[in-house]
Length: 108
Image 1: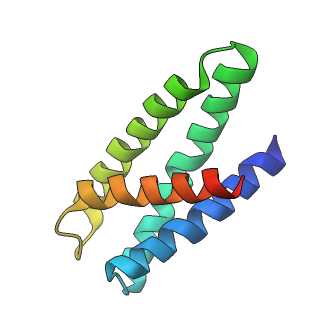
Image 2: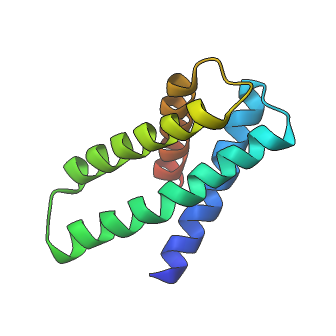
C-alpha cells in the first residue's frame, strides 16, 4: 500500500505541477501551494479509495466520483484562500484534477 500511495502522489505532483505551468503559474509560492494541497488530498483519496473498494466492495466508479469531487472542493478552498495568482481557483482545481486523473487512467 505504501508503494501505491507513493507512486500516486509522485505522479499527481508531476501532472498537476505540469498543468499549473501550462496554466501560466510560474511563481515558487503558487507552485508550492499546489504541491501542498496535493500532499493534503492525494494520500487521503488513494487510501479511502482502496479501503472502500477493496475492503468494503463499494463500486469503484461511485467511490472515484465522490472522492475526486471532495478533492476538488478541498483544493479549491485552499487555492482560493492562499493563491495570489489564480483568478478562478475552482476551475483550476477541477481541470487540474481531471487532467491528473485522466493521465493516470490512460497510463495505468
